Image 1 (cartoon, rainbow, N blue to C red):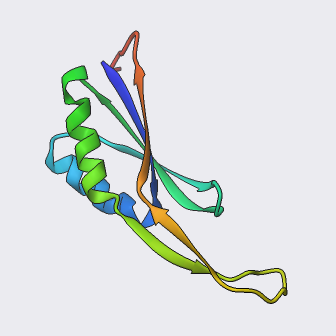
Image 2: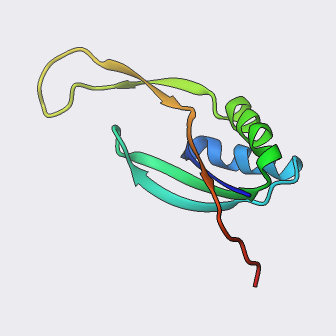
Length: 102
């Protein structure tokens, strides 16, 4: 049994949960904020059989697509806007030694 932890951009979270649900995965969503751009994210938690991990990751890869956003130089300084990539997902897969449903 594995725990799949996916950090996804807030704009991708609802689509990811819907797509994973259609594949039969049960997903718990936690809202979070932080990272390089200090943007809102969602942490998706899924407990799944080892054999289904690749399917979950494929689904996330399909749904969590990269986008680009222009950020101003900020701080009242003059300068060119900077284009940064947002979206995608960061996925962690952890072994579960014991799982109990109570």
